[in-house]
Length: 230
Image (spheres, rainbow, N blue to C red):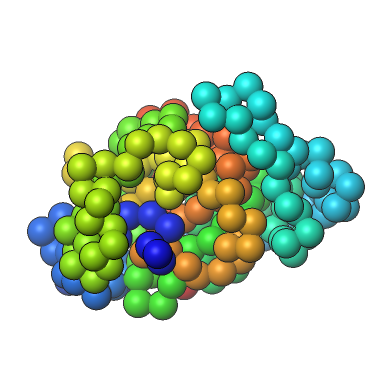
């Protein structure tokens, strides 16, 4: 069984993410953020389970039809919601709050769309600024050699795992870059409802597929992504 929901990664020793700095079994923070003053407070009401069943219902018209989410497996505080969020970042900026398991998309006028998320587990958390270098619908997933070394059962996907519902990256993926270099970190989609609000990945950020479809559609390449310190 492959424990990691997405590509394995470790953190660099320097203040930014760097492919050459990835070491097996290690992870580290990537610099402090100058975002003092960012606060989140009230906004739209939390969805009821009945409302959530509609928002997180099946998506039959996709390349691989997406089933409904079992919303009863999720704390309602992680349902998609419009909230008040003071930030100096531009509209469209994505801010990841791993401590509280949220992803925000800045909407302007002091508001943001907030999504529940899963984040990196202990030892694989990181922080810093990046940007969306590319996007993909139904991507291929290729486990890096570090993951295969730890989990030999992943070796059968060394040439890439075909897109589909069982692919760890899911239906949509935003690939995070720094200075023109892919960091090996992503924001990806997951069908596993019980992972939301938990640290389970190797540093990537996962949203429910229906939430990821929403964020993906609104996020162009070169969008800034800020990952706060956990």
